Image (tube, rainbow, N blue to C red):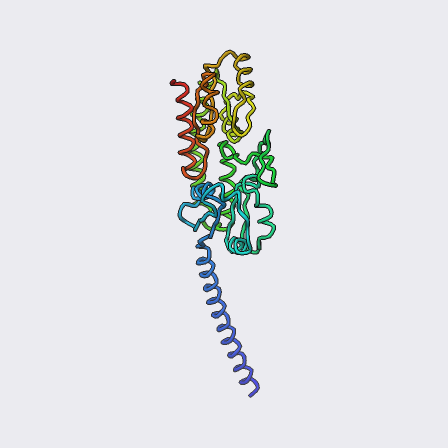
Length: 307
């Protein structure tokens, strides 16, 4: 009798163990399936403005949802954040900004964000920013560093790396997708780098003037020789121009580079007096792709040689 009971108990134990094993296998399959589904994420990404929006689009294409906070630069500068804006950004997967000198409110904004979900990306990380010779003032805030670093192609590459890495961290399953796009973008930039180097050699006899410092990253990268001409509110100093012309004896090879028509208008008389050629460059602002902006600037520099 005892042997029969023991045998029955053994059989029941085997059956229960088998059932438990089957149940575990089902759970494991179910969990594996859920992980696979969750890896097909759709990230909710927000950038501060359209400039960054277009750059993020370069890396992620249409794989994720991307929005930007501001339609124009003035709104971005004057932004006063509220509880609602903090709460809204805290719910995103990634918040990407240019740098603290560009979004002058961003440090305080980040301090007050709920960081339990949102990843915060400073796209200038690793870039050496240029100091302003004449710091900018926005009400009670003084900006000492020039934030237009992306006008230097090498800095733009760093910007792309920061964005790519941030997206890959949130969406590791598609890492190869982003790496492939990034490599393609680097190859596209090579031709522009070569063109700028060629132009630099052709313009070696020319001297250049700018009325504000935002173009310095571009002129430095392109190795254009800048004359030390002071300006106040984008207005060039006539005395400084005369001094430079007398010293260089080459006023027919001095070029004024500008990005906004207002710069040309306030300096038109001085330029006419000294026979200085004005050439307009595009400042990357999100209305055009980065590549199209560089293309246009190469075309503008080439026009100097053909004149």
